[in-house]
Image (tube, rainbow, N blue to C red; front, side):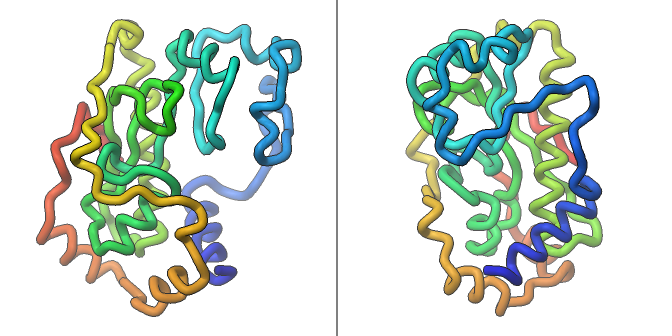
Length: 214
């Protein structure tokens, strides 16, 4: 697991640079994992006075905050191509399934369900000279591009989105599914760029909604 995540962090650094503090004009609030749903309305008042809400990498949001975000048409970035890959670590599992054409991200409206809101658009990485770790990290860049492209459209709030068809689901994963044995198996395969190129050449992505590619 340590080797796997060291390669993830290396790819992260390549695309996003070193870890650094947020810009001076931005405000942050640090919370322990799982504490988000314990916060009250008064705890979050400064953040709730916003024009746009974007959720990324969050644990499952419940209760009053989920209702508030849904009412304000919050956008959620799901790292995975919904409805095909849902749950956690979706792009890893797409790669684990030798299915790199299913690596990407989904921009959807946040609802009370877990990553189940209507889809506005998808995002895909384009393979250059990256290995699997760089390729999946490039999907994060594509997701950010997709968010910006969506928000450039002043009419995006009028979009109802496309409901997710659960019959198209290929895999639903939980954090507990990603074990040392799974990580070791994936690392042992040692998939390189040539192998990725061949896999992509022999498969096609599913029908995508307003895709953005990076």
